[in-house]
Length: 357
Image (cartoon, rainbow, N blue to C red; front, side, top):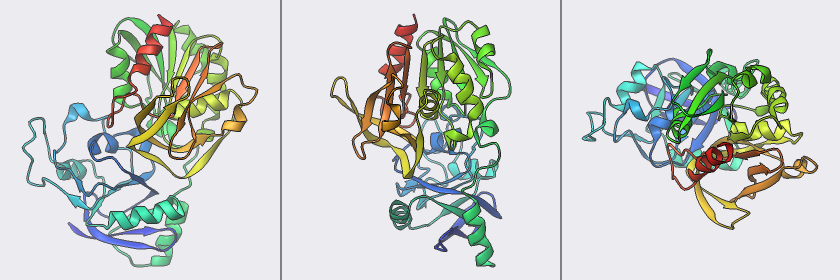
C-alpha cells in the first residue's frame, strides 16, 4: 500500500491510501449510495469507464463470494471508499476471499481513507467529473487535463468492450433472446428461473439474426455509457419492433426509446444506488428500486411514438418506464433483478414471461 490521490477535472484533490493496482487510472467519477452489494457493483459491466465512489463508509465487511458476482471480472476503472472492512477475513459463511485480495488479483485500483461524504457533495453540486486515480500528484496540470479527457468514451463507445463475443445459451423453456449490451448475470438468472431458454447474443447482432432464433420475446440488457454511442443497436431494435415482444432494462430502456424516435439526455450526477423510489402511474404504487444510469429519456420527445410513460422517479420526475401495448413493448430504467437492492419489482419478469407465453 502507498499514498494515493484522486485528481478531479476541476483541480480538486482527495488524498488516501492506494490498494490494488498502483500507477494511475482515468475515468468518470460517479457515486453509488448502496449500503451493501459492493461485490455486485464492482462486477457490473455498466460501470465500464467509471471510477465509483461508495458513499457507505464501510466497504468489504463480508468479503467476496463468486456466485454473487455479476460478471467474470470488473469493468470499472477504480473504486473510492472511506474504510475497508474485514481485511483479515470476515466470518461470513459464504466468503471465498477478502475484498482487498480480490482487488489486488484483478488489478483494480482502490483509494481508501477518502472523505467520501465531501466528495459526494461535490459531485452532487457540480455534477459527475472526469478523474485520475494516481500514486503521485506530480505534474498536477497534466493530471487535471487527463481528468478532463477521461469523460470522453472510446470509439465506438463502451458497450462493444463489455458485450460478449459469441452467442451463449442458458436454461430451457420459452425462448428469449437477450441482447447483451453489458448484461448482469442476474438478468439471465431471473429469466431462467422463470422457465426461459435464454440465448445471449452480442450487442451488434442484427435483427435478422435474432429473428432466425424464432424467439418468443427479446430482452434488451443494461450496459454502460451514452445510448447514442450505439447506433447499430438502435437500428436493429427498430427492425425488431412490431415483430416480437420486447422488454428493455436500463440502457435497454433508453435504446428502445431512441428506436421509437425519442431523445435521451445526460443527468447531472445520475441515479446509482439501491433506494430510488419510482411510481407506477397505472396503479399509483410506489416501489423502491435499484438503479445505475447517467442518462434518461426525454418525456416530451415520446409524443407521437405511441409509447406511454409507465413509471416516474419520485425524486426528480424523470422517466422510469415505457409501455406500448399495441407493439408489445415495455421497458424500465431501474433494475427489476435488483442485485444489489430491493426485490420490489421482480414481478416485471413474471409479467413479461406471461405476456410471451
